[in-house]
Image 1 (spheres, one colour):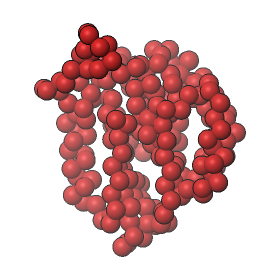
Image 2 (spheres, one colour):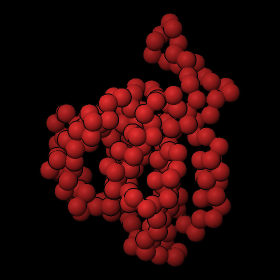
Image 3 (cartoon, helix red, strand yellow):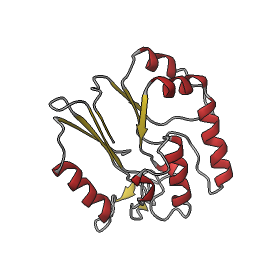
Length: 193
């Protein structure tokens, strides 16, 4: 996506529990951001039930402050594990395709957008006129992430997967193309990790 309107103020956030109080929206809107970026855990779903996932996103969308931000500010984003579908989930999450459709709906990605055909929610957005362009590249670190093994002693950490991948081959190639062909003066690369 490319727009000629320059952006100078970007706000971003993550780890948003749709069931918790959300006093954050008024101060965010008061800062008058040109762009809001969801960085993941936009809701806490952790479910295989897609009807429940519908309800979770609907609950977040009913929040007056969140709704007001969406009406006044461009909103883009990616996901992390809890909106992907399960704590610390990667490519083994069995409902990742259906869950992806839900997050793209939440981000108001049009049905005909090429991102709807991708495996994963990665995206690139360019803002501003020539000479003042900002490109925001959001990566998907969940859809293709290879399995990891929890440390049985600490139960808090994971062992490195030296042979594993996080982005997947198609996303790596896409990222290279986005950077090689960019006309932006500023590049922001965001991930959920």
